[in-house]
Length: 310
Ligand SMILES: NC(=O)c1ccc[n+]([C@@H]2O[C@H](COP(=O)([O-])OP(=O)(O)OC[C@H]3O[C@@H](n4cnc5c(N)ncnc54)[C@H](O)[C@@H]3O)[C@@H](O)[C@H]2O)c1
Image 1 (spheres, rainbow, N blue to C red):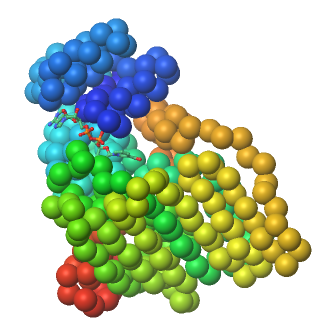
Image 2: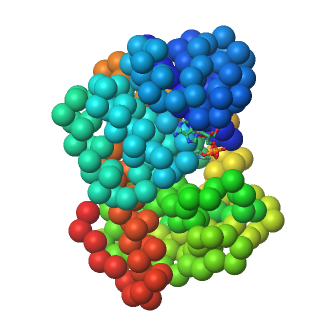
């Protein structure tokens, strides 16, 4: 496969590194010409500073889009219309109707479309998902997420719900294997142009809930979740990938090797593009995550719950 990396900024540089290691990186493109040239030289591939010049100069089968959220739709649409398999960083689009349009084009062109909900590839989440699937600790009743960090100064186009809470919205749907019926949120802003703290409640069938607490105020990086099951409470850290299980019989920390979720995610995209594997983050799910982010923002503006039929 020949894959191009569009956007080699703070996060896209990680994609470029892994794509190069896997031997599939064929070019890089960044609106900042110096950055594009730097990464092109680093990985010995051609570099471009616009999508138009990339499309004119390269022939490729897949593209990673790791540019600011507000640019995702336009770039992804052009790539899909060119019959390229597309991985767009999260959130897939700013508006859910833009996501629906991308989904429709990907179906028409019969290409893979996915989005960077990387926690589905976090070994800690995979272990908890397996416990939930096999009901090892009974039924999953409640999820609680904490994702806190200093404010990322370069994120200008969206607030914390679209940038950060979306990871936990997606993980909650992945672990419950369901979409919420109702969203209630409170959010506010202290230092950012958009909201920089938010607490979101997602109500699922049978009174199951996910509480998502995110802020850009805490001066340290916190990324944790708890899964309350009928027979145990499972707590985990997305960063260390540790999973702790507490039952009536005591506490257990199952051993699990640390793996790089981004590598697993990129390998899944390549396999899916080659027709060897299902894409783990289906585009329908990514559109739903954007719908829920929209509902969370609306709920916190109106002060009321928003009911959804997803
Ligand atoms: N999955 C994750 O865990 C994760 C983590 C961080 C960021 N992200 C996502 O990655 C995306 C980028 O975030 P970032 O932190 O790397 O931002 P960034 O600002 O550091 O990098 C964005 C890069 O895109 C380039 N760019 C902007 N417009 C462009 C265009 N039209 N064409 C080509 N290049 C363009 C910029 O020059 C810059 O180098 C965002 O969607 C963000 O939500 C995902």
